[in-house]
Image (cartoon, rainbow, N blue to C red; front, side, top):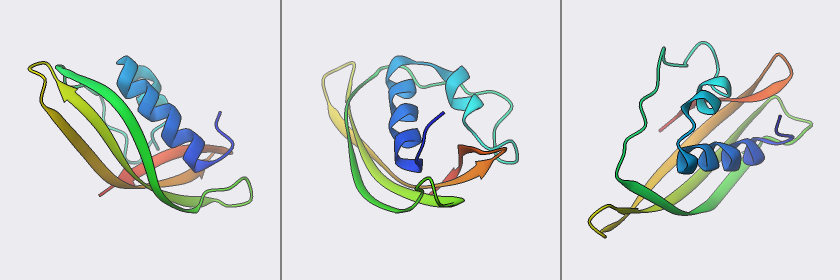
Length: 100
């Protein structure tokens, strides 16, 4: 598993880009994890910008990552998705808690 909250954020972005909902669910805190996850189709993820981090090191139990992910739609339009994500430790591993 990831050594920092930012590393987990980056691996979760890769899972979105590759269409791997099993990984996303596995790295989601059990108290906030949905029963199932259907990834939206029609987007090609083109890049991730980490805008800010707080905590989330190997020495912390909580952390945040603010990011902007870039995508293109099937019809060629560009867009972004931004989020301030919260991460925490669960059974020793970093997991995604929630985002706004």
